[in-house]
Length: 117
Image (cartoon, rainbow, N blue to C red; front, side, top):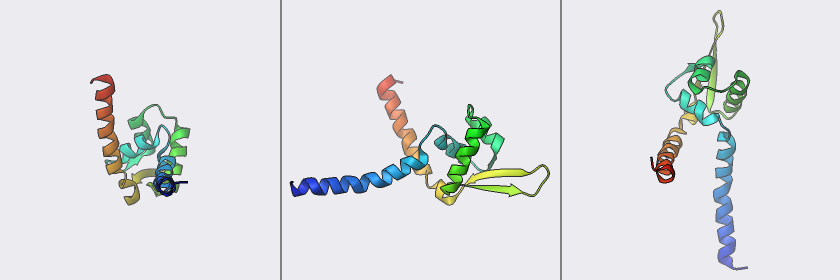
């Protein structure tokens, strides 16, 4: 086998592994929407649900737990009656802002190219 092909395969693999990792963390219909909803500050569960629209409480709860496990968000429970729970992006979660901006820009370009709008 050509040495260049072997190097190309290795470089491709090294590039794909972190991309796959990122896509696994952000995959699904709701995660990016939740991140965008939390971009402008802390929100309670129902505020996130209202802002996104169309997500069930069960699904939102599942996604928030998963995002907390990946250290993208932090859940804060306040000692109050009734209990108050807020969610916010962690510093690690905030590192996604540039990625989301790039996706938005690409989406606008793609939309114009495909739909002419």
